[in-house]
Amino acid sequence: MRGVGFEPTQAYAIGASALSKKVSHKSVSPAKKDLIVADSGKLQEFLEWCLEKGTSYETCIQYVKYLRKPLNPGNKWSVLAYKAYFRFTENEELWKKIRTKQSRPDLNVPTDQEVLETLEAACSYSQELCLVYKVLIESGARLSEIVKMLKEFDPGNLKKHNGFYTYTSGYFRRI
Image (cartoon, rainbow, N blue to C red; front, top):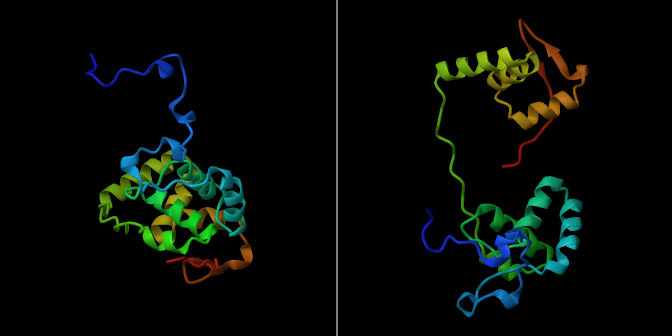
């Protein structure tokens, strides 16, 4: 049995979606006067600007989803979406005001045994997955780089050495 406060409201009880609620300045309580909300009339224009900048479609769509909600300074995606939005609206004051939380490096280093077990599982699943996993292990490349290499594979970039091959990709990582 649920405790008090978990009962659905009448609207939700008849099937209304909680996601369909629009955010507007009218729904902001006076206690949250510093609440930052994007202008919903500019979201399509922002999406086009975001795509023209060269950002991936998936990322731009993710930004728009976060811009439909008030800024959440504790959520990195929300902060990134609003920083892009403020760049789009040329609002340098708000752009400087919000800060992204720095992500920390993943300090979990798998043991040799864990790597071997994962390799065995990958190879038992399919030859393609086995190949990708081996390239990941031996090259230090990122999965996205390997996928891009396989999609754009050019035999002319393959160079044979003494017992192994190298592939010149020409990719640069953003830091």
